[in-house]
Length: 479
Image (cartoon, rainbow, N blue to C red; front, top):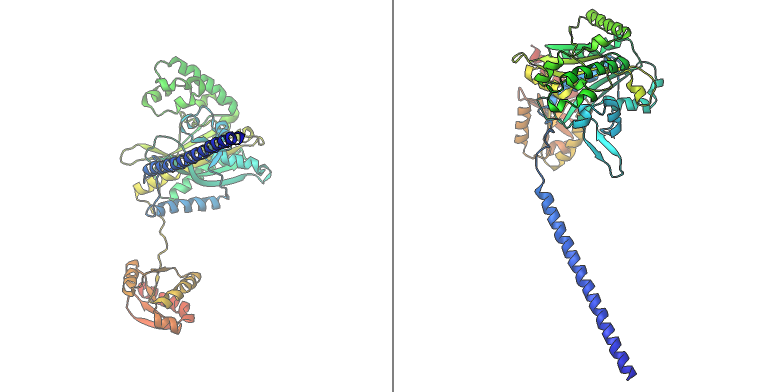
């Protein structure tokens, strides 16, 4: 009997165990099925949201646009070289507090326009909204303060501001910056204007106006800020609601406002120049004397303050006037930031710089029909027919390029007639043809695309023969 009872108990236990295993197996299968279904749903949702267009405020710069951009890049690089500037490239992403500290926490750039996010490591970072802060960070980090003065740095690249897209301004836009560290003489202030003028003239942009002003030292700027706060408090009720917090936080934003009603009130506000100390006045007057000596026209603009906190002393804005509408558009600007390096943990060292919006320069060039960069056009076309010729054509193409002969080709196409039609459309002077026979004989056919005459030459004489033929064609044209 005892054996029987034990057997029954064991049997029940075995059944229970089997049931549990089966249940676990079923649950596991259901979980796998659910995961697959969820993954499929996730994939479907992910595929559904793929939109084949750029985000608002972003855009592609297509090959047809590139000649204008290349012209700007070339002019910037040439002027940078002429004035002794070294190129610096800083990261697109920096710690957020770098910009909060330098640009100012109560500026519109920081409050409304900065792209910020937290990394997986927990760092608070931002896409750079301007170039100056990153350049100063690099200056301090890499010990450039000990370099021979002045230190001149040139930078160019994209910046990001979550601003309402407008003409010539995108959420991703491009700037060129020129910064000089370690020199307080106002001759540098004038040189910045001279450089900007040089760039704009080289790009064919005219009707330019340089608006200049002085906002004094950090001390006089603080005193001026108090005067503005007192003035705008009287008009608190007349100011739109969104401008009222700026009365105490950053009254310069009210002075700099584009709203017509706000601008009318700001027109009666105290002027920065009236708050200057003797040293700042002398600096500004000397700067204007240099501009007069250079013969560069300028407008003294008492309302100009620039929106970022780091500016001191000289500030300027560069405008272009539309000949049809008489409206002015800003192309860029700059000024002194003599306290920024110390504020960022570096030495007490003066600095000045300016930036130009490349997008706006390109837009202006198009409006006035300015010259864009013309890419060198190939004068030679390499055509091939047959498998053996194809194998030889890659090495032949490399030989031509190495010899400085810009060459077009249509690799992949086997039809010789189609290749020669492409050569005609490209407007080349000479076609080099390699067929099966030429590949075996190690020769090439040179065809004059104007006269239609052709000759066969040994492959090792090809470069000399092509150069001679191109030279003869050029001579005939000159006649």
